[in-house]
Length: 256
Ligand SMILES: Nc1ncnc2c1ncn2[C@@H]1O[C@H](COP(=O)(O)OP(=O)(O)OP(=O)(O)O)[C@@H](O)[C@H]1O
Image 1 (cartoon, rainbow, N blue to C red):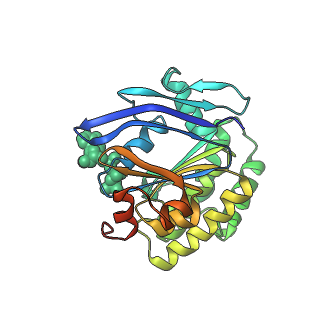
Image 2 (cartoon, helix red, strand yellow):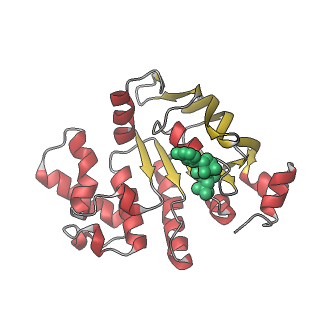
Image 3 (cartoon, rainbow, N blue to C red):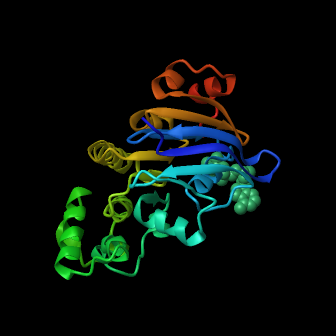
């Protein structure tokens, strides 16, 4: 099976060992890759460069689009990258306030991507809004309420619905359960796991929480001081880490 996303020698440094350097990997359709590592190891920098939100210093990212064409992300235009992000990709921010439009209704938040794809029919937009609210376990009667009136967990679920309505193939997530209560996290993780499986989404998820990684990711990439020190199947890394740093990470010495 050919890769959906291929990163080669991807580097972006803010300073010595600050950022990511020389990262290469392939992500296949339907695969969930977790990026783990201590705070400051470069996880978010790598995610931003993969998702076309920050330019790399060097290296490449290639993506196989819905028509099977390979697109070289950083040879495409800025507008082309933005279109990809709004249609075939999704990006779930840690803080839902950064990923939602807080002043407009839940229905408008969900409908925005469909409208960007040319859907204008009010009834269809509204039905999609209600369907997606139900899918993320929010009462569809809340469709006209703004996200401000939602709890943190609901806002995060709305952000997920807003991203998935356009049926992306690839979803990027940066600590999607960070900042939520433990019981709310568990609910969100459960829901996310079901959605990822049902839609056969490919996902790149950054987390410092190994329990989240264990639950969602098929494969893990362990980062330390801007470099990937180990890659492998999640169970293999968590149960039998090979690199000394992964061993420390797993034994929780480095956990906050
Ligand atoms: N825009 C920037 N300008 C300067 N330095 C930056 C910038 N963004 C990140 N850094 C630095 O690069 C390093 C890696 O940061 P990054 O946010 O990628 O790590 P992280 O592993 O995601 O950390 P955390 O888990 O705390 O979010 C850190 O030392 C950070 O201070």
